[in-house]
Amino acid sequence: MIVFRLIQVVLSPLAVIGSSVWGLSLIRQARRTGSSATVLASCYPRWILHHLRQRWDAPCVRMMKVLPTPVRLGLRYGTMPTIVAHAVTGYVPKPYRYPYQGQPPMIHQPVARTTFHDQALARHLPEVEQLVVLGAGFDTRSYRLPPGAVVRCFEIDTPGTQRVKREALAKAGVEAGHVTFVPANFEEEDWFGRLVEAGFDPGRPAYFLWESVTMYLDRKAVEQTLRRMSAPGSVVAFDYFTTVILHSNDPYSAYARWAADRIKEPFRFGIDQGDVPGFLESCGLRVEEQRSFNQDPVMAGFVTATV
Image (cartoon, rainbow, N blue to C red):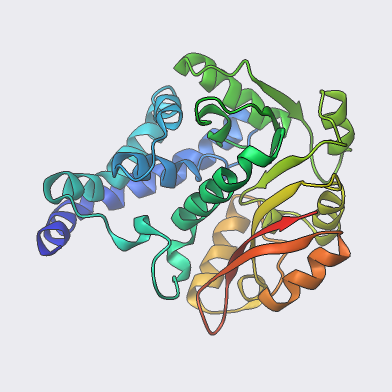
């Protein structure tokens, strides 16, 4: 571990430069293409977990290779200290080994979120016939299903984001013929009606994957979305921020809000951990699993719920 940290320190200037380029390039890419600035941010944990050999995600790696040069270089240099240190020592830092004993800090949430959703989907995939990725962004789970999986895949997102993703998939040679793309905006359109028109069967069990989306919607949109998941046997997995992130002036919360406001994707929905079961019950759902991040106060959580 000592050698690992020394390598990270030596290469830290690359991380600083790379992270800065990565953040600025995401904003520029969003403005140029009309896509969300946050959709590519979720590629970071998938990319680094793949290179640390903790999670196979060749589709993500292949798509990143065809994105604009600043985006690729920002991600590559931003993660290089950790990846090089791992290659030399074989050590995997704690954030990339979630779940682990103890209460995870909020800074581990983005990477842990990827692992949580992977595990929840793997657990329920044999029980459902349809996979719906809500606010899919650059999610790659439809392209890395286990061999023999028999499930219809649907992805819902705004037209601009889907256009960028479909172009990247085609350039990267990632097979997407089994995925049905449904363009829709959760707050402005009947996304469920469009999903049904695209071939989704509302009477059959489905798995709804809703990663890193709820905090950008208003409460009404979150409630309406959850209430559409009514088929017996259906499951929804999502993550959320608590009201601490929305209102607290602690350094992490204040910076997170500032960054979200700068890219014009402000946080709008938060729910405290103890209120989640009742909130879901009001939407016709029951908590199956719930995990939290940070302690005193809890700042975020993951949850799976069943119809």
